[in-house]
Amino acid sequence: MTDWGKHARREQERYRDGEDRLPGMEDHDARQRQLTRMGNAAAGAGIAELMGGNTEEAREWFAKAVERYRESYEHAPPGSWGRPIGILKAHVLAGDWEGAARDAEWTLEQGAAAFLPQSATRSR
Image (cartoon, rainbow, N blue to C red; front, side):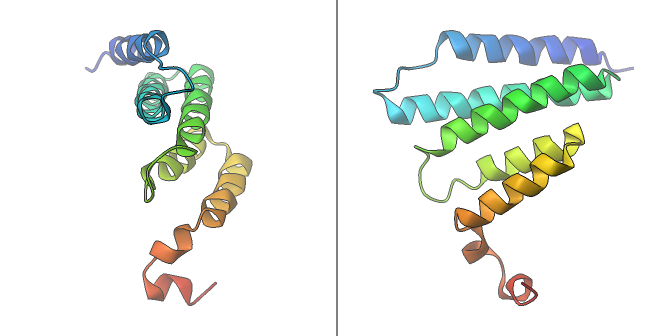
């Protein structure tokens, strides 16, 4: 049987370590990369908490993932679509359908539709 609590604690520690090592605002590139790592750790903690049956704790970690991915996006290199995908995935896993709809619109505003196959854009 998987010890989801152990996985959650590991990811939470990764997140806290990321906070301790977060570069200042003057180093945009290093900061956006560290924020993405923190988002990944928060999402991992959320998944582990969810799998362990701790839905409220999972929602809190998914909310942190959304915040870190969004914060990292401003200075991310062009084509960094993993962050908006991570935001949407965190909303869905948290059961936050309003947040998912809002951020799906935001993702489209960022130009994501230009990267969809032609067949996907015909129905819009």
